[in-house]
Length: 108
Length: 112
Image 1 (cartoon, helix red, strand yellow):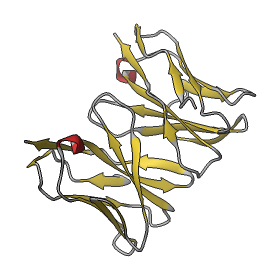
Image 2 (tube, rainbow over the protein chains, first blue to last red):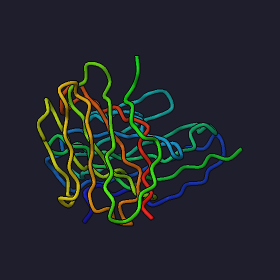
Image 3 (tube, one colour):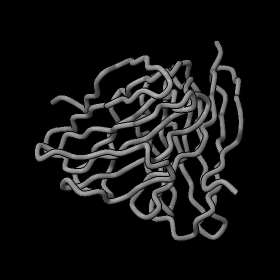
Image 4 (cartoon, chains in turn yellow, cyan):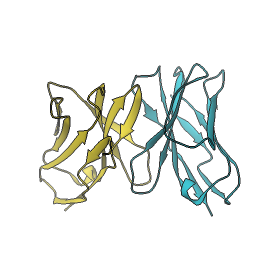
């Protein structure tokens, strides 16, 4: 089993749609959780950290369920500029473990 | 302030050759990590260095090595290149291990 698994995608949605990304991790001792965004042929950039209580940043909401070892990201009112690959990331033993990523394409 | 810088941007090598990739962290950051990203996959952890010492190593063969210099810059070396080493090599820096990591633009290595 892979350490971090994500929806395979890709997701193709119209502008204004709500999109949900799901992720599971295998190491119950994982310490921190993140969502990164990666544009085509660019480096990953931190989108948001994920906290146990859930957290929101504008149109983006992240949730963590430690018991189920499950992480989610919800994007509301999606924009063309949200098109990118979304990477679920877990910090285990000080190192970042990345999922494969889920590609999102938002169409006009 | 400058972000993480990497050189070269692109590189083409032949199987069996050796390659050295370079990374300069954000000013004040003392930890550098290296990742390999193969097309269609997420980045995979290779090494982490802090204060010139290796603090973590991923599941990569001994052909991969790295070091960190007194100015906190770092080099990743790969010997006896294989076609499968073709990838984007990313460097990330953080203040100290465990803090937020900031990625450089990467070096795209093609092995023919």
